[in-house]
Image: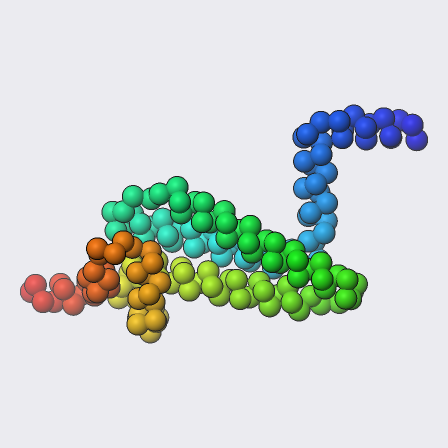
Length: 165
């Protein structure tokens, strides 16, 4: 038994050991609802990828501010999910975690909405995204600078090719 405590003491005498213990504790805590965390994390990552692709298409410099915003989103969503998970663990120890799943769904839908604006910048003639064009103009305006004409970004490339012919 002394050997176990000795090994534990040596492991926790470094910052690396404490970091691993904290990381293991967090993963153990969120394990019952890990898929909610995976889905939200994947949605944030997909939004980042589509945002970078839209910035490349607009020939817009990708600021480190976008990465900071992504890190903020991950932190906000993570703490919201962990808070809901903690409250639900207090209220009922076993069973479904409805609040966590609801927050994960809402966060993922918000990220999908943001992704849709970036997708519409990349492919303005996409039929599914055309349904949301009017509603996504505000989201697109927040992604591009004020001196860019949003209607110019959203014009159909196919119509332009027909008009040139």
